[in-house]
Length: 255
Ligand SMILES: Nc1ncnc2c1ncn2[C@@H]1O[C@H](COP(=O)(O)OP(=O)(O)OP(=O)(O)O)[C@@H](O)[C@H]1O
Image 1 (cartoon, rainbow, N blue to C red):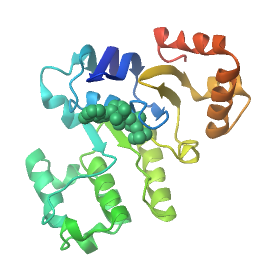
Image 2: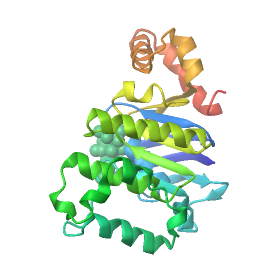
Image 3: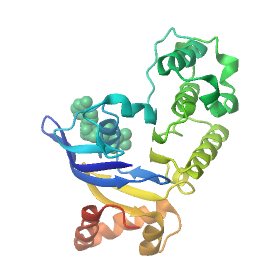
């Protein structure tokens, strides 16, 4: 569904992404994990066409994305920080998006609008919302047009525990509908019940892309956080092991 080939991006001297190769398919929930500044958001923005790679290519449903931008209507995107017009009211924002997309009411997914009770704040200007409430607006917009692909950048950051659970349940529901979901998060416990595959980035390099079963088996750890910690610890002890996992990038997902 999304194929990434030899993707490279530099910001002046800094290599933000170095020769990334990956294949993401329907029904997968890919957790993009890596330290701050490892390139997760740059990768996401490259898929969305918001960052122009220096070289390489991204295909969505076999079509290269550097042509027709209409592929973006297939994608629901929840940014790390949503930027909205300050004076726009919440209700107006949803209406405006609906009008731009020319989608009928029946085709809309209003689940999160209802569950986050956003209708009750339709008259509030965006600038008056708390950080967490802005996150809820971003989440509801990402799912609003029932997209086949969801890209969620730190979706639970800033959400209270109940809202975080509501969002996670929603992601699980969409996963059951065979959608492709890409998530970044530093809260690995949030990803445990969602993830089918883990893509680990470090300094712009893909260290591995593996299905969660393989990762658990190789590390002997059930929890994602512990499995990743184990990998990083072992990686420091044994550089050869890192070479071995780097070889995974040649083949992509090891199903
Ligand atoms: N527009 C830009 N101009 C210059 N450097 C940039 C730009 N965007 C990102 N970078 C740099 O590229 C690197 C990767 O950044 P990116 O935001 O992709 O990391 P990340 O893995 O998403 O980090 P975090 O976990 O902190 O969100 C960082 O060193 C960042 O400073």
